Length: 172
Image 1 (spheres, one colour):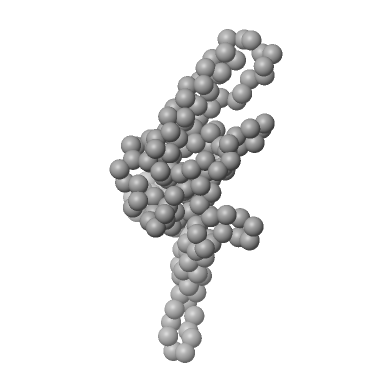
Image 2: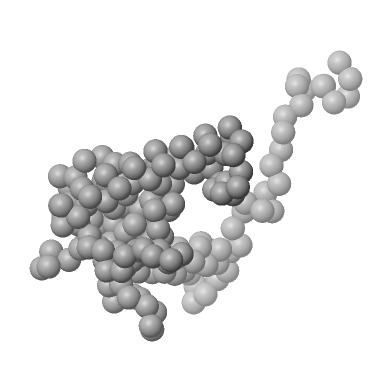
């Protein structure tokens, strides 16, 4: 045994300077400065989370949706602004992500769109994969419309994505 192994295998030590909280005394009470900062940061993050109350409302109001439709609705809800928290000029409960975004939410990552002039087998397979994913997205969106979980506000056209209003208010 060498000098490093005099007490058995060498143990890893942690640098406590990064994990030990800084203590301060204020009015006789000790409190952790870092924990207070962490609490404030968590509170700010919770207040600024886009779609948190939308997700809760979606789970409460549309619990009977099929799995894929619920997954799409939750993905759309989490990216939409909450009612009362939308910045000036933005509308609450609106989804603008397009069908590519919904395909990603559903776990169908899309290959890059090939050029129209590209006629290779890889480009043909990419087009087919995109068509299969979009067919699934269309079926899911149809189910969401039939369940009255969302409404199409603006149809997609000329390079513009569709805009959807999510129905997440129990009074509507």
